[in-house]
Image (cartoon, rainbow, N blue to C red):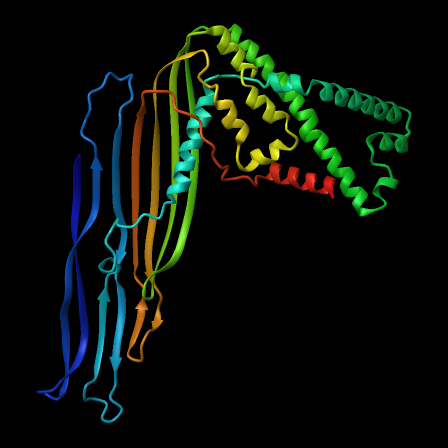
Length: 395
């Protein structure tokens, strides 16, 4: 492990005037109260490794840097009410926040959320090994209801178009289920709009997507010109903190964790690999897709993705891979300003800021197992609209 650093010095001073007993007068003061050394920049990295430029190997490095370190300015003042002289003092002194805090000693990143990002990256990479894939197995299980919905919506579309051609606007509205009667009460109006949105989101869009995916899957199989496959996945997490650190000093910070996984393999059994691309070799994933409202659970914990990833390596010979994690942290300290005692006022709260960066790569010699992970952003706009529509339909 290599280590490099740059050391800087800090000097805390008191400057002003104080009462001198011998001369019985105010005399100047310029005093060094404290001095210490601080690691302003440091880097740790693994020793060089001369590989073959094809095989991943373990590696780690980190870099920390102080980006700001300005001292607090404190004003100590006393005026003797009796003679306005004896024991008087008027002093400005500096105090570095780094004297209360050991640089780079605090990690605010949430370890559990970071591991969740790694699990997401690995599971996504396993699914990515299939390349362009489709859910043909689940589509077959839903074929009866899909055909019925398609027939129903086709008839609805025909009646709507036919009435519009004849100028029968009331008949066209009735065909879409948005007649005046359905809008007389707010509950009916909300339910009608919810039904229309859900029909679009979970009827037409998934059907069109499935047809497109299956066509692309076939094209991917036909046009394949190499037996080498690669799966890639990513995961992310972030957070922030803001709370008391020591006395009137507060600690504030933000962090992000980004995980990446790459898996490399060759096709050993083309038939099994192709069936896996169509989603027909994983009965657990098919069964989950057919469970009512399973997609709602997947919004928070993508069980479907994890089940699908179980067969990510079917028909393949694994040749290696890795997952890497980058964590960035920005931490700052600051003190409140104002009077803290009858004789001391904090005129400037100072500022201390540091950046921490850590990179670690772990080589994989065997195909990793998928793991359940939580979706850290379950309330995206489309999902929120779908959730509201479901609630409206069921109430």
